[in-house]
Figure 1 (cartoon, rainbow, N blue to C red):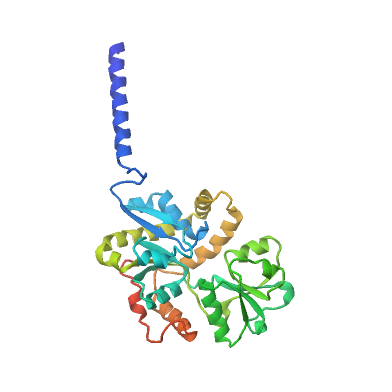
Figure 2: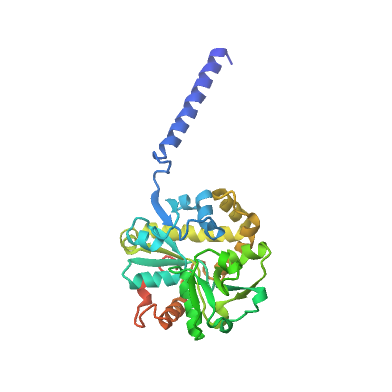
Length: 330
């Protein structure tokens, strides 16, 4: 091939490469989001990185959302920017709640939110911790004692359910996520998530007793994914594709725990792999209790409602059937 011919081929290849790059760049808008996809935001319940959200991380990283024609932006939740508020206002199209209790209480207050998938079945995430040396291993032993609560948090509802059921009155102390007073023995017990303090405190050498509400008949579910009524009415196909992508991501996450932890560490380099692996053992077991993945059963919702009615959180005539739908799971 002559020098001029080689030059012509090289120029041609350069033009093709440039055209491909221009087409690729053109496929993204000025914010770096892929065009041609339905853009939605998903509000998480907390601002903290956690393997509980690994399915959403992987759905983005592995292109699962994009495969279903959706561009999803994850938004951290805060007390002011919580999923119930932001999804009700359609500032976010989807949200993740700590449990169906928040869905039912939100609906009871007029929030136009609807559950579309239950991620963890019979999760029993909320527990009560006592120090091993205290010898306190039952709810009855906490009668009249100081217990650390997180007022306004879903855990408060769960603790009040079990104490009410057992007719045990305690001194409620609002401590949030601070375990300092508990470790300093200023409290006799404190609420915790089985997947956070239930793992991190023993890892630091703290010997604990765990009191599970499930042992007293208080069965709790895990994360509930919600949308709003306007999305169901005006963009049901987006909801359908989002739900399908979520279920595929759940299945992928369960089968690839190492990738789930890696995707979490990608969001927070300080996240400890050992903690993530222990968390996933709990999260994945709860995910797999649901068949099919994400299913919302009437029995579970009715049980949740009754537990809330028993402590005055819901009216007995509250209609749970309008608070969720399984049309995208069937």
